[in-house]
Image (cartoon, rainbow, N blue to C red; front, side, top):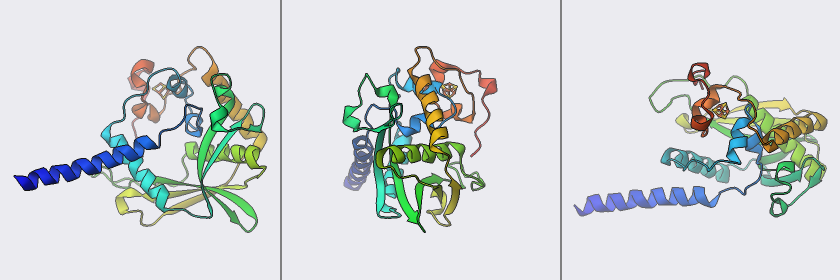
Length: 244
Ligand code: SF4
């Protein structure tokens, strides 16, 4: 049975390596761009008050896959750009200087790639999807970029503007199909919003996360995978079915 033991040992080594990589990339306790891209502000409100759910092995594998992809798919000279800013003061800040007294004034994030195309600045992000799910069901590829991803690139624009004075014109989302080994990438390019509009929306989100009572629920298909579904308890009949 030595071969069985060796096989098990090798599998365990691989799983540990995945877990180590994912856990080493843990974020600082700040309002991260991903907290404020969705429609529901109650979810990030809980994120700052409740203990996070422990990561399932499924989530570990998904994060690991994303990390491997990002480390090996740099689209330009500037990639994995860490950005942090005090949005209320419109000032650049170091993540280490964000604490309890200014946590709901600041936003941090890491943009995948910043490119220049014929004089215009483009912020690009890579997203994965699957046209075949784990049950073998087929899904159409995206026909337009997810609004949450569009919001994400707009917030990067604001952070980049505050940090470096650079006014990015376009956002680009590169969709990559995991189930087809990233064959046939799809890119959506769109004009980014104005700095004033983005700032207004971000401040509203920060205000909602800062308030002492939970913000209103916004029930969408994303409730299906919300880590706070139990405590929030949205009426199940109102949650739309998940469609990719
Ligand atoms: S379950 Fe839905 S409504 Fe409740 S916090 Fe999560 S995303 Fe928001």
